[in-house]
Length: 458
Image 1 (cartoon, rainbow, N blue to C red):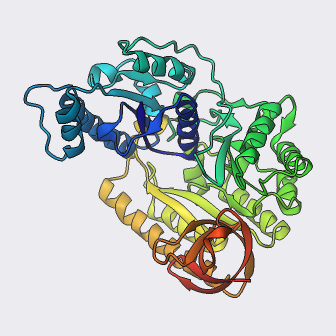
Image 2: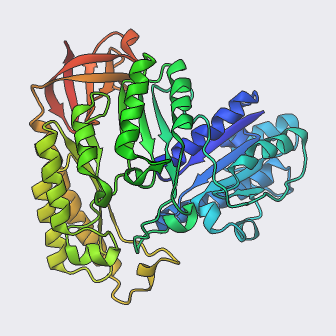
Image 3: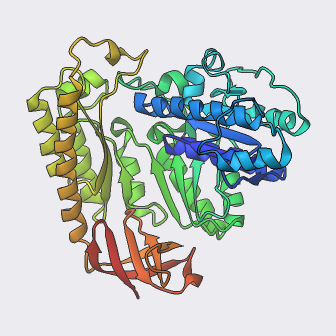
């Protein structure tokens, strides 16, 4: 039997899709060439922004038509569905099972199937353990059944994509921060830290598969706490385990970090431990203390800049990536200028930039001083223009450096070149034999083309 995934949103969703795929592969399923000919489609959804949900709604409309065609429904349209039409012409009606999981599934847990009858199963945050039963039902031709949504989250034992050199490793789920714009605490629940033995066990499985780097995932990894072990201690335990077991894993990344919880102890671990990469994702969200307070971020502009200064002082080769939101209710032009000046001060290597979208059920959605979309978009464009210039300036300063690179792919533009990434998440293309894919190597940054370096193997 065959499957097809559509995954939207954050790295945690990507990790959970990879974990679900491991279950499918273990049962002998294979990946379909496209969604049109799959026996099972799993749509892993996001609710962080309204645009993400709107896109998924559009996809469910598409699957409504696809499912009708696959079922041999009279009058079903086959335009743009050539593969499905050919399948039905060859084999007759072929069932299609549609599963929706992820944050949108949790938010609309009891209404999604009513709104979209095409959906066979709605798998919320706490029902992922039911996937095995769903597969059994599909394999044996059973009708869809109701899932148990008992509030008990469990971590998958393995979240790697087949054949990947990099893997996500979830260490936490949920969030206790309740930023006023964010729906995550409502769909992911309270913070739950994964026990150390489970994490180390997954690392051993990843090492057996030749994985070279991991990214520890959580809505706020800095608040990790399992049996008294905090995040700095976890990083140290993981690094010690990798060294002791002679693991193939040499790099540790993590995200996301909440600035209010990033301690001096963690800064020291990042600075001193060779396994921990020096490219850090540190979301700021805004540069104005007034707006940060309305967002319930629980730090000020000055707090954030002080943290960055301490990090740069301790970690000379540090690079920072951030998240920036503009157009939050009550934001003034002066607040926007505060964002721009903070960006100039910090000099981020890159940033995820977006404008505020009200999310139903969050406090900020009911604030009266909402900003018009036209103003949001104009402000966002200024933020983007500023960051594009800063990114170029930051990367130009790296030309001439010799760095360690994980070669992970053949260049699409030139089959004689490989693509690789650095600790700082920079991308570089360099001439090398394909036998180096999956290996660490030294590369000299010769020049910069866009945001990709051109390099030479050392």
